[in-house]
Image 1 (cartoon, rainbow, N blue to C red):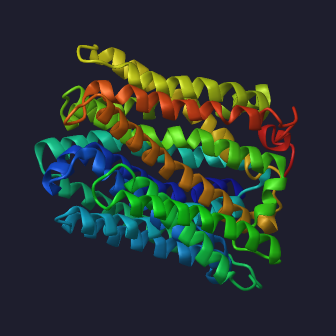
Image 2 (cartoon, rainbow, N blue to C red; image 1 turned 30 degrees about the horizontal axis):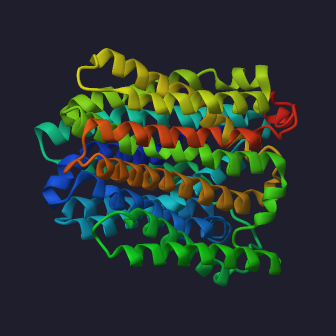
Length: 465
């Protein structure tokens, strides 16, 4: 197959799977109020179900690099799609919050392998000078998920039944498996080495205890002392893993990659931005439906505006990076992204729908540039032989950040509701949550400010093959 065709087809196949995952995520958040009523729960309580997907990611993402090297990227990618589809069917069959949370965890297991292994496939399929173009091939179809998901989810939830939304994944998953079998080579390392099982135990325990504990803080599902104990235990596991990683030659999550300035800025600095990015898809549909009284379909029609803003920006993201470089782009755009996220908290009853739509559109414009820039910069100075292990670390931190965004947004929303003395969530409870998660984007600025002016030049200007 010609190189130009391969550079197009591999990102497109991976995008097929990411589209399925993206549609699923956006369909679910649009349907949360209706699902909460079906389960007899407060809508904010369903943040546990949203976070449970990230728990699956937190447990299994650390081994994705080793598994892809050991069994082959195609085999793992194909299996991951199948697991995700099975999880979708279980979600549709759930009758209470408990089984639904478990089903979302199973989906997370599939997603844990699907997204990072898909990135490995992309990295191994294209030249480094073509990397940004390949990422755009991957990103644009994936951005259709936030556009299609809210509309489709809102329509199905309003006019049919929320359980039907999970059947959307079946045809997409089947198509993804077929395309993977036909066009993607089963590349793997001849000597992947041994898996760091103790490191896997520590990192998995840290992710589950910390994220689950935080998601249960302020709720009524378990005693609060148990939730706080889980948080403390999770933090302890993080410390133990850091000690363990220093003592072994090839740890599961190699923290030494943080010594690479571009990787550090992308992953650690980007994690602050991703907290806000992860919170918005959870907060916005709730604010529009529970706060402003919109139907699921109308809220979906407004929520999808951010996807159009993102697609517009992604069409010329490479030109922005070529003109200004990674350092200036990431630094100033972090502030613009934070402001755009916080602006979603300015809505109140009576706000014209076109004003809300315009603000949400802007809320997708700047974060999309930040997202594309961060993903490209992460691998600017990573050698090809290390991309699998670097991807495991980057994906783990990124997904945990997205989960923290949902958790922090939920805690802030519950605290605001409590302080305002509201029996149920009201529109005035949402603005503090949007402001808090928007401010996290500003915390990435000191990290990106330490980048050199020419950081990532070979990526942004295509000077390396």
